[in-house]
Length: 233
Ligand SMILES: *[C@@H]1O[C@H](CO)[C@@H](O)[C@H](O)[C@H]1NC(C)=O
Ligand SMILES: *[C@@H]1O[C@H](CO)[C@@H](O)[C@H](O)[C@H]1NC(C)=O
Ligand SMILES: *[C@@H]1O[C@H](CO)[C@@H](O)[C@H](O)[C@H]1NC(C)=O
Image (cartoon, rainbow, N blue to C red):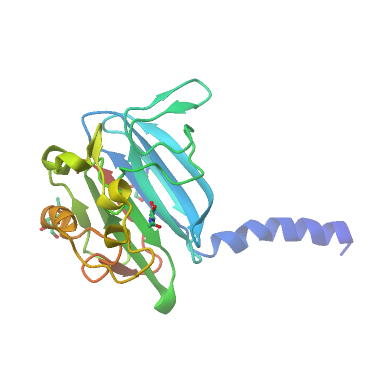
């Protein structure tokens, strides 16, 4: 075979090599009675690389796929966006540098669907986090792979938010407002629940309410599953 023949064969086979590892599909649905701007990013050691965004009117959905290998990321909803035709502007909650297609974290408050695919023991880890506050009610569920336990956070956290955490469109986590170690756990690494974290936990027992809330807030599924994220389930 000629060199160019080998090259052609390689180019034909190359896509198959990628297809052979199962890509995880995330179906993102907006069931809110208002428009949201869905967003996702991938990250490695808190460095983000790649992401996107999409306007979702009530009832619309959007599918994204992730190559599972060691991929961590998050999905969230932005609200109150005013974006121009080129996808630039500003969102009231969850804004990512004013871009439709996010490449970095959103600004708190934003309810987060977090995932880490194909980790040790060939497991996916997933959670809903209120560590960056709450803006939109959320469900996060595996839809295949024999996993049945989905999680959700649907309480009226915006309506019941303590005054000192309340902002237009959402409810901040106390770490964002006060920035102290008690709430953020950055230096001690040993913080515990507080009356604020209990406010979140009482209303959304499945969700992270403070940074070390792993025990009751992390869920797993054998790697290879697909997932659904619903805003306002
Ligand atoms: C999105 O994915 C879901 C579940 O995998 C599927 O049922 C649905 O048809 C897909 N929607 C689109 C627009 O591809
Ligand atoms: C939300 O989660 C709670 C607690 O796990 C569960 O009892 C409830 O059925 C879930 N609701 C939905 C709509 O999934
Ligand atoms: C702790 O980390 C948070 C972000 O997680 C940051 O906003 C805050 O300023 C940090 N606080 C201190 C005391 O370093």
